[in-house]
Image 1 (cartoon, helix red, strand yellow):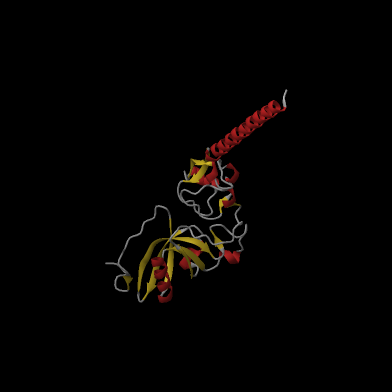
Image 2 (cartoon, one colour; image 1 turned 45 degrees about the vertical axis):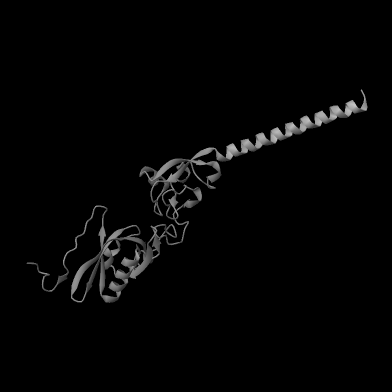
Length: 234
């Protein structure tokens, strides 16, 4: 076989090898793209999940749903099963559409931060004596109505607001146990809108505030203020 023939055969082999390598590279790229864009089923929040909610409770109450998400868009720690965090609590509010992430759950006491329950609200603390806060029966998560007694009259000023902390106890407690001193703290913290915050601050400076404990079905009415002239009724 002549030298020219050998070189020609070698060139053909090199070209074939190069073409094969290009095809292999293209194939690998296509496989990677397919794997990246392949849908993956994960859990997402269907509605707001307040801080302190267990994974099991969120599942039972229908707060979760499955969604198909491209693999590249799946966050680190995303769950496709609530079982790993069923007995743990949400350490912060989880908003509708958020992926359910394992690191967002933990044991009671894993978070020391005060969690404001909903967007558009703010935390406000006021000091209240025992009877004015239903003698300690109000706890983080309670819904309350707020009354103001000032200037010789008493009336409802807020029909329903959320308590997010009592003393140092929050929706996600900062420790597994709470001392009696902490439990009897007279400071109550609310999650309120700016308008409600202004009412509470004014009421605190103007007279005596009283809270009433509400259930999910409790209703209030806008009654006329009670004064010395009508306290005894008609």
